[in-house]
Amino acid sequence: MRTVAKVGLLCALALSSAMGCSSGKVTESDNAGGADGAGGTSSAVGPLELTIGPDSRTFVELATPSEVTAKGNGESSIAWDIAFQGRDVFINGGISGPGNSKAFGPLSAPTYLSDTAPEVPLMLQDRAGGALLDWYDYVGTTHQLYSRYHVYGLRDGERLYKLQILGYYGELQGAPVSALYRVRYAEVLEDGLGEVHDVSGIDAIAGGSKDDDSVPSSCLTLDTEEISSLTPAEAAESDAWELCFRREAVAVNGGLSGPRGMEAVDLQAELTADETEAELKTRTAASQKSLFDDADFAALSDPGLVYRPDGVVTAFAQRWLEPGSDPLALSDSVWLVIGADGASQYLMRLSDLSGDPAVGPATLRFEAKSVREP
Image (cartoon, rainbow, N blue to C red; front, side, top):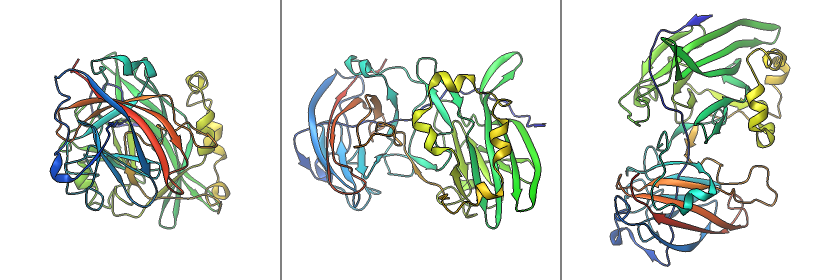
């Protein structure tokens, strides 16, 4: 086992977003992003009804709130705070837009009754990510992450690897520390298995609760266990790494994350919807080793697997939808969103969905309100 000697403190994690409601549709020149939420009184309008679908984004500003128009994917507009396309919800920040929007969630349903923004451990902008998005289960009451111990297939050109995330917490001077990863991985060959690597202490602090792109991530080279410190911009230009760790996010060097062309797949993805908090708390690196051992060349090269490079990861991800629901249904959750102005704060809840926006036009109804700072 190798321990990477880097130190840092990170307060838990989270993902999310939010939206607004209104009764009209305005253009980019009508509004430049929410301006009423920061420090003001709580206000709610709604519900707002939208038509969303797979072919283009539907943009919303949360101050009024209203549907707005923006060119293309909204990459040059700060008139919007959130946008819908298919089953994705984007915020105007990070790689999705020029604004300063951030989000957190899901939060419990009663949160919406408050006139004050809840205290949360982290606010996130849209960023690059992919198959490893759901490696953990987030417990909101304690702000803790529990690994699912799924095995991930990594494809790097002609080479295949298997990866299992064993932990997110370490210890420093006798105190528990978050965002110190432990992973095990191995190259999987047609005639056997390469060396099994067990690496701990991978520092993914990246500025703690502050989303600062100037703070580097820890990026791992699989063959050598070497750790490089790269900012997201540097990582996106480098093919010298395979995995990057940044707070709760794990990226592979492909797609939007980097130029290497790597792809990944979750071998147990179909189990995610039914895994319970109680079940995940009982899993350990030892109890789940057999799952890792059983992932052989035949399993990783199964033609039914869909390997993908990293794309856009949003705070909402698919968490605004009820896992495994058929027909598609909304989750009973609330989201905290900071507007594109970087200051206004909103709570949002989704109330009704008719249709599947991934396959055609669907009708979405939701409510949102501005809230005061804690």
